[in-house]
Length: 310
Image (cartoon, one colour):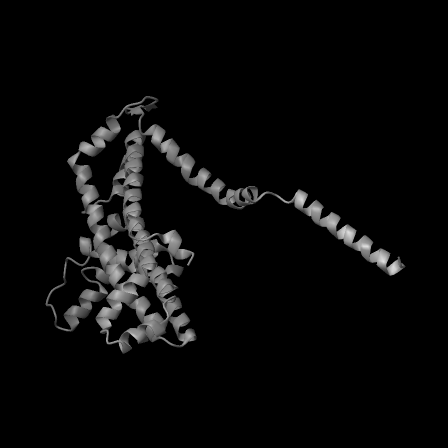
C-alpha cells in the first residue's frame, strides 16, 4: 500500500473514532429539552408558583387586629363568596371587561385590517404601526392621568363642545364616571388587540380574498367566511390580553371613576392596607381561578398552540 493510501485509511479511521466519541458524549434529546426550558421554568417557579402557593396557604389562616395565625379555616372564602359587595365588585369588573373587550375588538380588528390589506407600502405600514405604538412609550399612569384635564368640567373637550355650540354647559359625565374608565381602558389596551390580529391577518394570502370576490362572494361573506375564521388566533390572543389587563387593574378605576366604582384588585388593595392578609390572599386566589377559567374558555374556541406552529 502506498503512503497516500495509508494516510487516507488513517484519516478515515480517525473520523470514525471521532464520530463515535461525539455520539457517546452527546446529551440525550430529553435532557436537552429540559435544559432549554429550565431558565423559563425557574423564572415561573420563583415569580409565580411560589408566591401563588404562599397566597394559597395564607388564605386559610386566621387573623385579628394583632396578627395572623396558622390554621386551616374556610372562613375567608366563605365570607368572600357570600358577601353581596363582593359579587357587585366582580360584576362591575366583568362589565368593564366585556365593554372594553367589545370596543377594542371592533377598533383593533378594523385598524389591523386597514393596515394589512389597504396599506400596500411596507414602509408606510411600519410607520403607522409605530404611530399606534407611540403612546406605549410613556407610562400607563401618565396616559391615564392625561385624560383628566381633557375630560374635566373645564377641560379641552368641554370647551370644544361649548365653542361649537353643541352644548351650552359643561358635560359632567365625562370625568369621574364609568364613561371615563371605559375611555381610558380603550385608549390603553386597543394596541393589545391590534398586534395579534394584525399578525394573523398578515398570514392570509390576498389571492384568497380575490378568488372569493371572483367567485361572487360579497365583501360581508368574504369577511365572515374567510377573514374572521383565519384571524381567530389573533382575536383570541388579543382578547386574553385585554381581559387579563382589565381584570387585574385598579389604578384606572380608582383614578377615573373618582372612587364611585370599584374593581377586584382595588378591593384586594384595601384589604392589604388594612393588614387583612388572609382575606386578601383568598381574594387573590379567587381572582386567579376566575381569570384562569375565562382564559380557558377562550382557549376552547381555538387551539392557540396548534395555530401558532402553522
